[in-house]
Length: 143
Image (cartoon, rainbow, N blue to C red; front, side, top):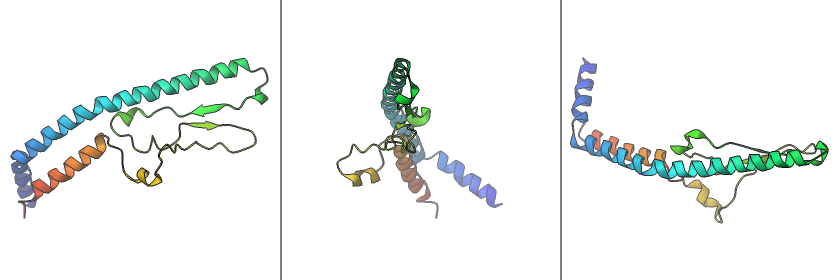
């Protein structure tokens, strides 16, 4: 019995104006932010390929492998088109040496270190905000 009531309320909420506006807003925001993040991904992929090419050219030039300090590069995440996460805050490269443990170089481009607490504007953040507002609007008249 409780499932029938819940199903009825769910279907009634699907047909409301608030849900329609929220869905349209989500589609508009995704279609606005995905091309921007896709261009950013293409730029990071291009930098990654250039770094790999430069690393391979340096490897071909050296005669004795003891004299080289290779750098490994982390490829950009494919799903960063939708959500960047901590990918920009992490480093993308690490130097390998026989004298020390390799560490990923963390990027610290920001002047203020407290700015890293705030999330970057990406699709997942926008959708979380819109879905939270939509959940509040839909649940407003339920009780």
